[in-house]
Image 1 (cartoon, rainbow, N blue to C red):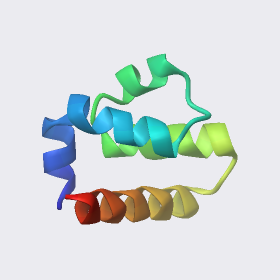
Image 2: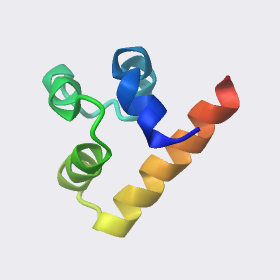
Image 3: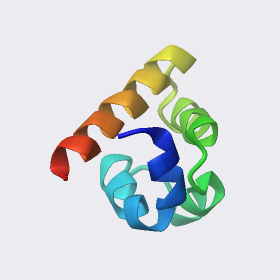
Amino acid sequence: MNWDRIAGNWKRFRGKARQRWGNFVADEFDIVSGSRDELIGRIQARYGVAHDAAERRVDNWLESVANDR
């Protein structure tokens, strides 16, 4: 699965993202609105990790979402 599919169906995948990143407040998922870069930035800020670590977390989540299908 590629990110374009996530972005295009953000409302559907938002719940799965919310399960994965429970420290986010609901408004942050509205702000992310399917943007991979925004999600990475929010993970960096909320969890205090480096950009590459946040990117790996997003990639791992993307892979897990693809496997759930």
